[in-house]
Image: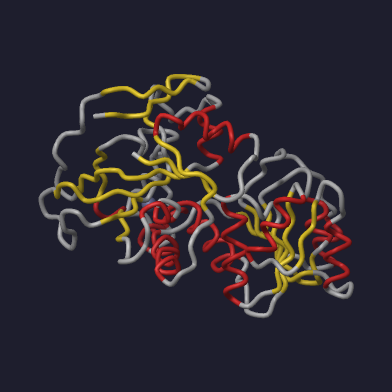
Length: 340
Ligand SMILES: [Zn+2]
C-alpha cells in the first residue's frame, strides 16, 4: 500500500509498504480517504525529537476513512461506513477515559502521525472504541476536519470557556483552521465576534464568514477595537492560540471575570503576564489541548446541520510537503485537506 512517511527533518517520502494485518479482536480496518493538516504536522515535519517518537513514521493526525474490515467481536459497524478515528492512543480504562475526558487520559501512549504511525496511508487498523461514525450527508473532506479542528474548537468554546449566546468573543488569528471554525460556531450560537487576522484580505474573508468586527493586527491594535466595541467593558471570552505576540493584549481585552481559553502558541511559548490583572479582575484562564470523542461527535453533528469547515485547499497526497509549507508560512485561510 502507499504511505506517506517522515524520515527526518522535512523529509517526507511516498513509499510502498506492507499493509497492516487483518484487524485483530476489537479492531476495525479503515481505508483512509482524506487527511487534514494541522500545526502538529508542521512541528512533526520540522523533526522535533520526543522520547516516544519512532522514525520513520506515517504522517497524518486528523483523518477520515471507510470501514474495510471488521475484527472479531466488533459490532455496530458495517463495511463501507465512514468513520473518523481518534488520534491519541488512550487507555480506555483510567478515570478520565471512563468519564469521557479522553484528552486527559493518564496513560496515553502517543499521538498518531506524531509519535506513532498516523493516517496518511491506505489502510489503518484502529480500535473500534476510538472511532466516531460520520453522519449521512457530511462531505468526506469536511469530515476530515472533525477529529482535531472541529473538536478542538468545541472543547475550547463549550467545555472550557462555556461560551453563552449573546456574549462577545475575541477570536485571534481568525483565518486559521480553528479560527475559521470558531467564528462560525460563535456566530451560530448568537455571539458578537471580533476577529483578528494578519492581512486585510484575511480580514475581509473573516467578515464574509460572519465576524461582526475585524482587526488587522499588523496595522491596528485589537485591544482598542475590543474596548470600543464593548464600550470599555471588555469582552467575555478570548480565543487564543497565537501566544507570545498577542498574550498580554488578549488578557487586557477581557472584562471583569472574563475567560481566556488557549490551545496554542504559534508565535512563541513565553510571554509576560500581569498577575495583578489576573486576580484583581478575576480572570479565568483555560488551557485546552485536544478534545474528547464526544466533541468529535458533536462537531460532526454540526457539520450535518450545515456548519461546515472552511477548506482553503484540497491537494493530493504527493503534495503533502508543499501543503505543509503553505501552512507553515500562513498563506492559508481555513483548512488544507489532502486526499488519498
Ligand atoms: Zn485513559
